[in-house]
Structures are given as structure tokens and as C-alpha cells.
Length: 135
Image 1 (cartoon, one colour):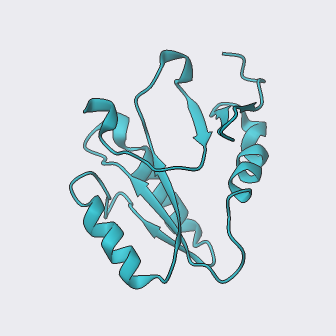
Image 2: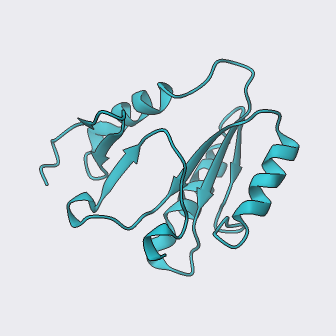
């Protein structure tokens, strides 16, 4: 994969970038911003996965890093200390709905996919389906 390949856009507004392309973080931010609602909507970031499986640890690793940065107005769920995974996801989502009125939820999850997409960060609108890759 050409690391300088910046952004791939498909018809459904999915955006992709390779994680080793250090200059692409502006593109990731721009893509996420297109989905964000206006002010006064609670922003909830749910980082899904477990550190018990190396391939599934992306979510809790990112969650811990985001929690350390203390992003104003963002509520982080899913860290190395308190992971969110397929077993407790429904309970966590119910808790989020109870604690936050009409939240805007961003899901962060690793996924299985095509070989050509290894190392790709994808931003799109739609649900995250934990466990779908392994059925």
C-alpha cells in the first residue's frame, strides 16, 4: 500500500487512511467533524475490545489514551482498566443512554477484513458490529 495515498472516499462517505501516514491525522479529524452534531449534544466515545487478545486491543488502548488527554465535553467508555466488549456492550450502551440525554456516540473498534485494508483507519457513519468478523 502506498503510504502517501491520502484519502479514499466511496459513495457512502467512508474515509480511509493508513495508520503509518503521519500527515493524515488532519484528514481523520476532518472526516470525523463532518458527522459531529452541533453544540450541547453529549459526545460519547465507546472504545470496544479487550487486551486479552492482541488483535482486539485497539479500542481499550485508544480509550485509555483519550481518557489521559481529558478531552473537554467527551465521555470515554472502554479503557484498559474498564474494557467494553461483546459481553458487556449492551449493558454499557444502556448505561450511556441513562446517563446522557440524546448522546452522539463514536465507536472505535478493531476489525477483521480484507488483506488490502490491514493498517487502515476507516471513518464512516453506521453501526459497529462487535464479533461479526468471527461470527
